Image 1 (cartoon, rainbow, N blue to C red):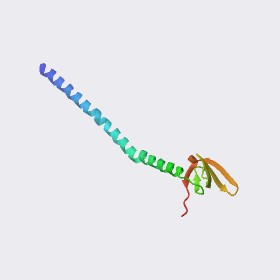
Image 2: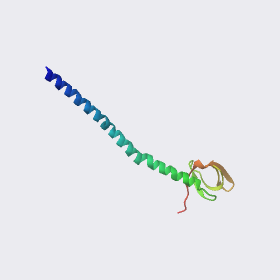
Image 3: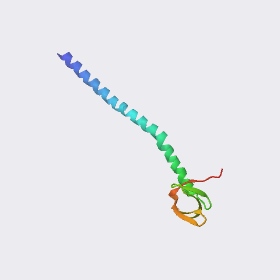
Image 4: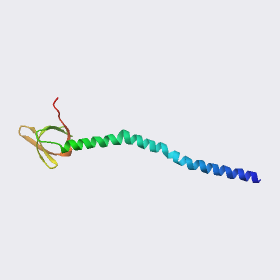
Length: 107
């Protein structure tokens, strides 16, 4: 009778030890997935955003740019966060710097 109680007690202690170690190992795949997502998705996107922000800060007069709406124009003037684009001989529009998508490079 006592031997069966001892076996039962040893079995429950072994199950508790397995459950404790299994908890940390259960989170390991989630942690690995987060690290992979960080290096494949989040980090490159942050780097690209920094490059675009740097490009917008370095805008100068007479540079040809494309807006996010697809309008191609030449920078006529810059007033803080507002850029005046010349898109035709007598046509000028105002857009924010955030609306500038890329610079046009002559190739």
